[in-house]
Length: 252
Image (cartoon, rainbow, N blue to C red; front, side, top):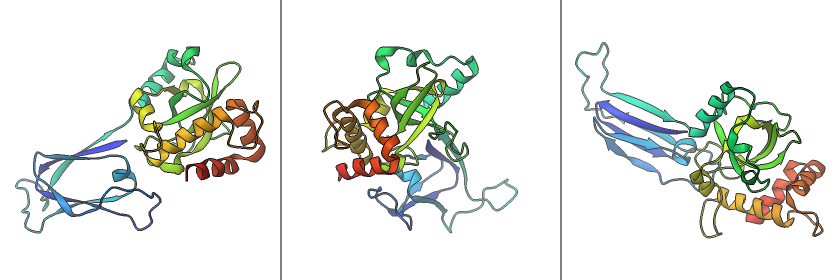
């Protein structure tokens, strides 16, 4: 999910440049002047710096070739890629058999409309979505649990560290319960803004989503049309795009 790069030989100038077509309204500052990374130093990229911007590692024209290498190579670096702990936990659970992780069997911890999990990426037909493009685990809000507790319907959200951030992250999926684990406190904190003056747009949208589910104000409803059951009925009746438009408009 994040990337760390260490320079072993040679000095390099690292630049961070805005892409031609920007799909996110808020992006990190450009660094066209570059940051000099010398041998033995490292730099890290995460969140929008990695997924929404272009970064270049430029070897200076005065760098000399490294002695002993077969070609005229002036720089050697080491790239380290990191993924969520939940990704490893899910795949470990998958190899243990059909039973879901114990953390998702505890009823007090699994509250529809409130519980946030890390889950593999599925669509509403119960099919995995492009495992090559979306191989990891992603934060999601639990909306429904099947009667036999074998499957979840979730609403994928964002903690700002994944390729799909802001409103791009919002989608529905149905998946086996063993392909999800409870999200950590850090993930939950990044996913849900505590108030309107704090957090990313994605976190504000998730907060608004949870409020809308609780109050029923995502649609013209009665006092009884609240909770995740009513929310799912609205999605099935009006379609996911229409409900998403209402929620996005409410964030401003």
